Length: 302
Image (cartoon, rainbow, N blue to C red):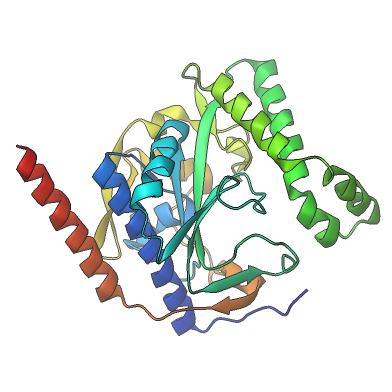
């Protein structure tokens, strides 16, 4: 396992700006094709509480419903700036095993500690989460949770058989690793299609559990019904209209920052980070240019 990388405040800000560049690219594509998305997790909290990144945060997340992500995936095939970005999921990177997608910034490097042996493409990234409906019934909801727990463990096995400290668990992960990951994703996709046949009370990531106790089985589906623009680093990005319900379930008293000793970032869990230089002004100008182009096209259709 490589040594932890320590980021200076300047490097942390540099990392945030690279992530911001990817957020703006997601926003550009979604606005052009009428696709709804929201900032997620700490990125959404940053928009609400700080009008930008949480100062000590080093990652960025967006989230889609399954239907909207399908549209986004198709749009990226012809619209994503592939000179700068790479949309990574199990269909675009055969070595990728996680149950959510990422957008990577080409020309950068970011390797998480303990994952140096894994073969998927690396680089600075933002996480792209997708939610599906969760069954309403007591038994089906727990069955749903159990199936996806098992799939997560199979997909995690490539990392677990190296990183797990318990000898018996490492042996179990070596066995699980022999199960084809493509079969796991096929089961996930079938399950998603089945669950999305009707609207239910909750939605959740099939292969990435929400972190709080209150959201073990998912988030209220109503949060994903309406979206609005939120200020983020001097620009307008998309978020849930009912962000209060969402953030309260995730963080409880979300407007109160944690004490100073709890303000840490995950870059300390990376063994290698190579960045590129970019300024906030460059990103803001790209956003303004994309907004002007979209407005011009809309006027041309009137």
